[in-house]
Length: 246
Image 1 (spheres, helix red, strand yellow):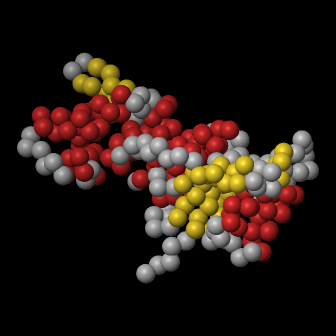
Image 2 (cartoon, one colour):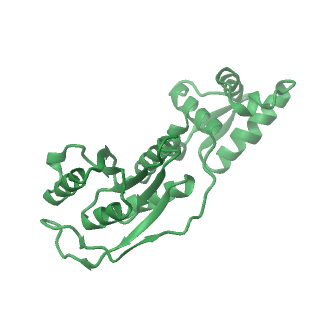
Image 3 (cartoon, one colour):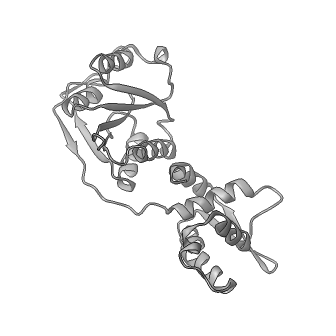
């Protein structure tokens, strides 16, 4: 039986103790730091010192590139890393980066089994030029969990299909989505084993089209006698965030 590992994920903002203290407190095995650059030499001196300190204590540290000011980019990284550790304990620091990163990290925890925590520092520092924003750790508070229903794998697969298929001169039709679902063995078709085309369209609408339209991820337009399905900008962002489901 594989040993359960302690995994910590933290946006690498202008912090050091706020990241390091809970990692040491929980005896973390693996740490993933989300940062704009994966080159250690381009980090601030105190960020470099953090990585070196964790490494010296036998903790595996990986830098993962992410735009900490892009909610969906942070959401994608956290959900993907969490999915890579289905049997492990995953904790996410929502206090170590900018506000957008905090929101993205918190939403990712709601959509997965990861635990979000917020670190209350002992004191704040006026300048981040040579020092982190805060010093010490007063306490690490586990945030309440409000699970949200993540988009299904079938729905992600359809968004991905639309992203790959639609062009300036061609937009997929509902019939194309059914053909794709059958070829890809998507569960909403395979598990139901519909008896005819009418039943297939009913399943497509109920499981894919209607919920994705309601959430604003796709648009359906009447063109002649066909219904064309287009991916929205929000749908592209959601696809980026949950692509790991594929």
